[in-house]
Image 1 (cartoon, rainbow, N blue to C red):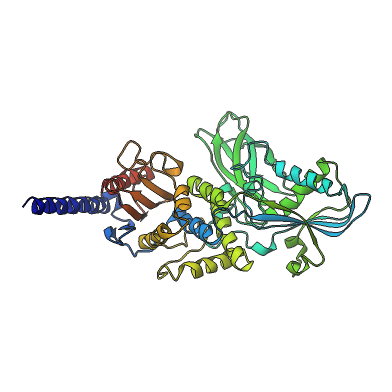
Image 2: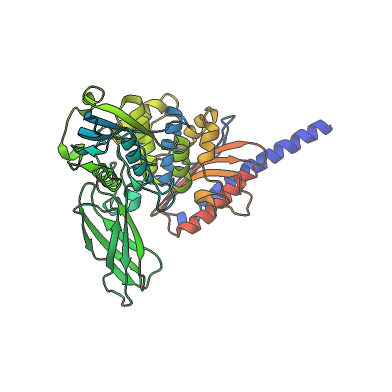
Length: 485
């Protein structure tokens, strides 16, 4: 009799917990602020495959930065956590006994996003890797170069940005596109001085790095605003940049961050400048393969060119951690491209998306799944909650699960989830990637529930009629119920 009562009690408690998650999702869906919204939710026991709660689980929606879990998971699976992208230096010509390189110095890009990155270098130390390269060249007996410095990023293509990125995004720092050669996070820093008169055009004091022949058209006004309300417009490879919007009054040096037009060419200029600073005489200039319009360069490496130095970047795990914790678009794009490059030496976004689908298609149903970039900045992406959960379940079985899990922000503690569920049941139990674009809010990841279950979940909402913070407040109720499930 006691055993029967205990069994009934356990079943009742289980059903009650299950219904609480479902009820929380139902309450969310029926919120008046979401009456015009599209919502996709799915939560599954990652070990047993049991569905815990769902709402339109197959509805494909733009999920913003939660798309990054596909890029980071793919990179960890294909490349491995300890893989380090390589950038190589080649010489075309010979080094004489009197330390002269009679020929060109080539920089062959391998898609490393960590070169000079602020996420891996202290402020003011971003150029140190270039100076180290200069010292290495001098140790190899090169003190003069009778040729050019040529940057080659061709194995990653020259599309500039992925399909579906908005004109209003691509000139800003978060709209920096991927490249075979990345430097300083592919970012330009603009510093402005604003006056005390609202409506007066701000003064561009200086920019760094120096971009040769860049024309900045400044329409940014001083205003009674808090923080950066400005936007930078400009297409990839275009040296025309336009600044609009507003900055706070009475600022002597206000920083606005934009995207670098041509990272490959900039890389050649930066190494050329560093070599000059280190006392290496260069008789030629700095060039890039795209501008030279060269073809079949790959066949010349190893035959006409000699490899003299290989720089290894940060590990894939380190890059993936920054990607998910801080939601860095460039890093996500590079992880995707590095995966494609590893598989068939083509690091273009288009090829890398094909390679990613080939890898996951035997494990995940790709019906209704449309991914156009690696970061989620494209509104052409369409992913359902179930697609995300299928990926998360596969990763939970992988030998790379623990590294992958470590890249995800923890509710109430770290990354983009540091304020979510703080001092609530979900704190420390929800580990997920967030996604935010205008009228889009999404989360996907895992919940380590109080009962010991590992729940894979995804939550996407588009076109809500309230503030983003209000959406998160309502989502937290669902997160907390999963945490105590």
